[in-house]
Image (cartoon, rainbow, N blue to C red; front, side):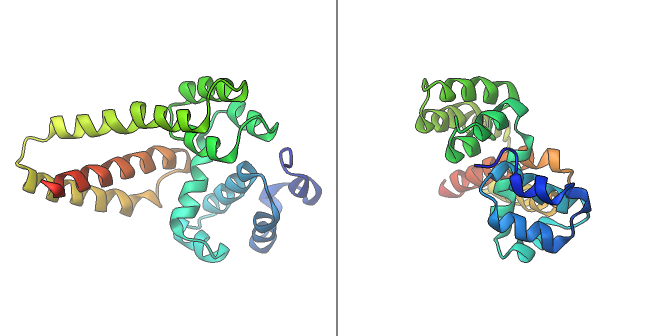
Length: 188
């Protein structure tokens, strides 16, 4: 694993790289944090997530998934780059609030938490409260609620590309919570 990226250090400052150089590095790099930072640089240059996905030959979901990592606290990124956290744990930690991510990362790095336990934390602390709040706040009958949630979800997806990169992880959490709430409402 590079720390942060031997390839980027050899080539120079990311801001000076052209699209082809960045694509080359992304496809050869093993450090997902560096990949996320390079993708974020492309977004800063005005490319939408969809355009980045097309340029890399990836899905927009994969680009969005990787970009979540840019919001992680530096300590969590450092633990990953030191080989103390798995890539799987890193993606799960990106869903937690920063202070909880650092705490969980430290515990995982020390062997106190497994990836499955981090995933359970995310489910319990992020997804379940969000769904409970959404259901409690719904004052309309379930069939109408599904229509409202569906409309909100569509509007959210339409604005994600235009949002600043630091907001993407939070918007993705909201999108996933709304999609799950919509599934629940459609079952009723």
